[in-house]
Image 1 (cartoon, rainbow, N blue to C red):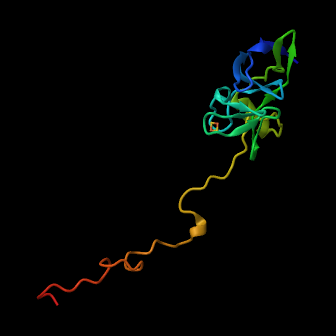
Image 2: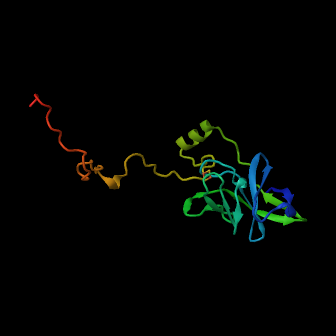
Amino acid sequence: MTWVRVLLAGELSPTKAARVSCDGRAICVALADGEPRALDDRCPHREVALSGGLVSDGVITCPGHFRRFDLRTGRCLGRAWEQVVSYPCSIEDGWVQVDIGPAAPSRSLREILIAHARGQDIGWPAAPMKPRPVRFGWPAHLGRLRRPGPAERGLPGLGRPRAPLPGTA
Ligand code: FES
């Protein structure tokens, strides 16, 4: 456990979050139920800083694309597979302090790949977002339908067969 004092409790606003930096990590601190809560200040969607979002009822709204995260758990509302890392947080002597835990051991990608090849599970670098299927192209439920042409839609004057030009028939 590594508790770090990050800001005075009186500086926290009920509707805004504060961005603090600890040990090279950006952390978003905000109030939920009157208690300070700390989340990683990086949205799992496109890594926009969550601290720029509005806070309401213990939920922070990402200013990027308005995903909403529960400040108590870090979970995205309506998207259970997306979660932001949350840190234990408390108030002591009027200061908000955050437990940033032990620094993650830094490993090169080579070390990680070798460990996986040996069957050791040392984990990947933080990957809070679960991969999700990406859909491209024409929606499958529309099948091979096409938009009817003007003649099929009964529009007057459009799609009628033309009369042959004089002398060509
Ligand atoms: S970056 Fe947060 S919702 Fe898109």
